Length: 131
Image (tube, rainbow, N blue to C red; front, top):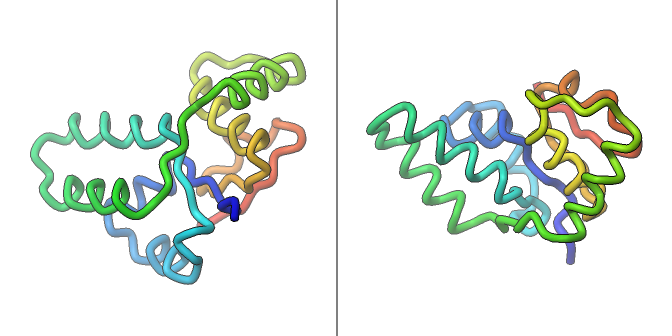
């Protein structure tokens, strides 16, 4: 069964930081229905490194890596990203967000986000907004 949801960086960071509302929503989903892009996981690892020795964040990252599917950004996702950029204005500061959105489209998943305004211009993207 294909996971139905792909978490964006803001949502994953909220979960890894122990944000109660995000954790509550995640707890209502089957673990098989949730995945994370390797791009987003990398962003979170970079954020954790920038914060220094945050033991809680590091522990939560380890749990995420053990329990959620981390999807590679593969050729299918890259092709979807190229197609997406032919439809919308490329924005360098949002390149990673657009890559993850393209991956969600390519995989037929809804992108779970807390910041829909960052991807609202992307046609064909299914969103699940968690605020």
